[in-house]
Image 1 (spheres, rainbow, N blue to C red):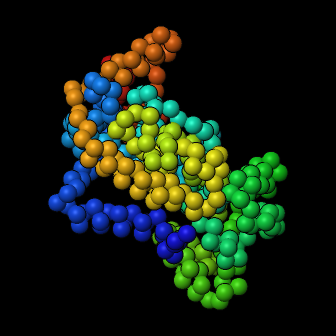
Image 2: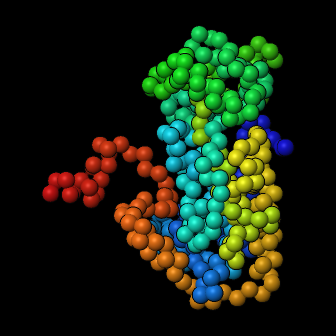
Length: 343
């Protein structure tokens, strides 16, 4: 397992972005243009997608001989009302689009909570506090300052113990914004490893708290379990192929690589290993001489009919490109809601 301080994910993404942009002659990058529907051809092969430009609000069609879904997980659906470490677009859209196109999924009930997500300040809520903090000697403490669990249990065990301590036993701390949290004793790292060790070992976290006037080398962090990883997802085989010809998937959008749980760092298998397999096998499929025929949305028509036959009215519109965090008061002042209310 590789790491880069306490900002491994950011470094992985920086390298991927740089590589894509440095090979600009072969790669066209479309930003702010998420896919909203897969396209199939009349033979039933995956043949591209419909994109939605979030700036111009225009739709466009991208025809493709192969498609790779790597849209991430479902943290922004806020299962059970929990905060999440995930980016704002993590609303399981890739799984939904693949399902509408007839691709099965597995283990969707498997939701992994990271034991230590930020509970305060509000601007950082859900932010992942890496296990490295506990590995360096920081302990999770209740409101009495008591250590109540072994700090390096598997994530599901650790998260369950934190939730039980804070909620069932009532030994959590109420944050200034009304959330429940527990102390993560980061100053202990300084006591164990010497002055300056927190800033040295955890530079990103130090800065993220310092912005809000909190020095985590002197004051403990307030944390609580946070939605972190979707272990379930799109069914693929060992080559990252789905059952739909021409459609591949990788990353958190796929399911079953780790079963219903995973250890820290193993997400890189989904991302790196299966990402590479998806790319190589998609390229091999295209180079095999596949021909894309007339594009259709017949699978969407079929799906809509199934909804109607099942008596499902006004279902949730998906994909949910970005979740709506507005309050009722803000929503009431929007167009056309505000106009209809005034009328």
